Image (tube, rainbow, N blue to C red; front, side, top):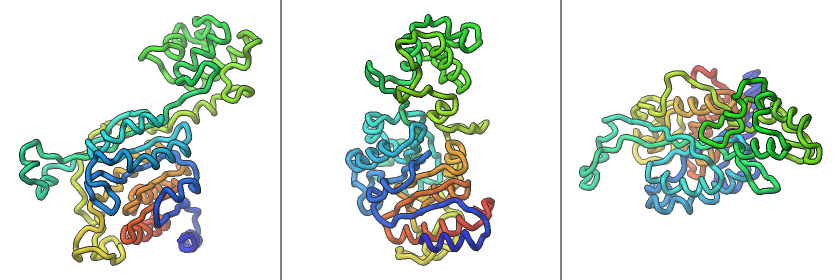
Length: 354
């Protein structure tokens, strides 16, 4: 596959994003992948939907445990995680993510519309409000700092270092060149706390080390020697590119258009072992529009995107189309066949055609 990718890139005459697709268990390759800026998880739902998917959501925490361990080990402080699942499936996994240092940000709801109800009704589901949704839950790494007094959150650490320097709180305003704003925003410990902009953080660092007690220096140092800089502080916070008017409810029907890969070769998908010539290759293919929306919001061009449970690799394809590098894995052979063809196409096609 690597040779095919290299040939495709050479033929295009244009430097393209790198990508890899592992055909097998992703647990075997986490250690080989470059550290991710973003992880797109679309794995087990606890519905027995593919080989290895637990039959009930109550088993999902054990299923995800080794993956969460690896995500936590290899993530950057600014890595984000986007966890696709059912509401009850996510609820079973959330405590494990929280314990591993992933902070909940928000839930995004995919509203598939009334047409999604057809065929999904039985004697049980008719006695409730029809379900037309699934969720993608946004997490970020919990930013914490080691100190002699124990592990502290960023909010706690900023005030702790200022106090350790022996400076009264009001002098933070002088350091930042503002009237009573630094104390209320950057050193407060209540819900009004603000993550300091890089230039303000650097002013606090310089001031504390210039005017603080020399005996305790350095202050605001991660390694105990060098001072934290504005650029380093900026890299500790996840990327976010805001889109005006876009909320956390994304209405769109489940895929039934030409974007849906089928056993009859739509969108150049190869023939695969699949029951029924016109049956969908994958039961829950995600819209590439959603994947691109997430990736462009939370990463920069050149960043690495992980898709550990590739399926048809919608996230990896969107990452390549957006100028990011993609690392994906898929164990089911006929899914991997379609995914590999899709990624080869994505690595050579003009972005607007993806």
